[in-house]
Amino acid sequence: MRIAIDAMGGDHAPKATVLGAMKAVSEIKDLHITLVGREQEIKKYLTDDKRIDILHTNEIITSDDEPVRAVRRKKDSSMVLMAKEVKEGKADACISAGNTGALMSAGLFIVGRITGIDRPALSPTLPTLDGQGFLFLDVGANVDARPQHLLQYALMGSIYMEKVRSISRPRVGLLNVGTEDGKGNDLTKKTFKLLQEAPIHFVGNVEARDMLKRQADVVVTDGFTGNVALKTIEGSAGAIFSMLKETFMVSVKSKLAAGLLKKDLVALKTKLDYSEYGGAGLFGLRAPVIKAHGSSDERAIYNAVKQARHMVEYQITETIQSTIASLDIKKGETT
Image: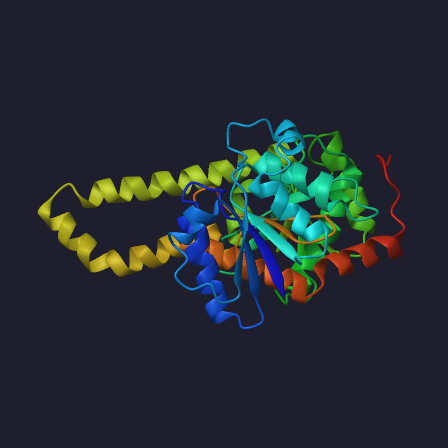
């Protein structure tokens, strides 16, 4: 199995990317990785190149670049060349921690969409209180969505959770302002009816406050709402840990208590870190494309590689494509 990685994407690139790649090939024996980026910078951290190749380029898409323009103009950038490795069949999947919008554009324009999928969805697995996690889609690939798009998200999410996470009959929920049937705006009301008729285990509406309780294994929403919810969860978790740290540092007594609880607090922080589940998959493309968090460290890159490998191994793309084709879902808004 071959995976291409944008070595220059992310806050800690290329160091974190290279270290994560080396960890992955050392533990996954059938894996071969191509690191795309500035060769000399990559080699500073590449202490073992067994089953790791370098595709050299000096061009990089930065976080400040306008996504579509960057992909079209920076044809030799590490992200674009990474996507081309997949398009040309030289890699089975690709990963980047770089510019999210640019990666979505590269996925659409270079890797391409699955036939029958109108728009791909950006789909991270978020932590839950029981440690199992739930798949949340879309969190920003499409800020505007139609009921048909959310139906496709639900189908793709259900397939992923069943095939990769081994969850029998994954529960699919619709993010809404209340749990009662008929709640919400025009989009959620129409989507609710579609999901009721879909070949999935639809459990109804889910409120934002209940998502981390794992009321559903898959939660679908439009990209605008999903992105706001994701960043609220991220920000709240970070703020809580900052407040805990501040509280534990106020006196000698509290510092001693912090020392006693250090292991438990680290374990809790790890449990709430969604990078432990890998990156956010761009579901709906012809091959697995994984968006790792911009602040990904070595472990997050390693987990993203494992996620990509599982998607290839369990033929998620092929399963989504065959399922969508068999349902003959028409494009456009369903009334």
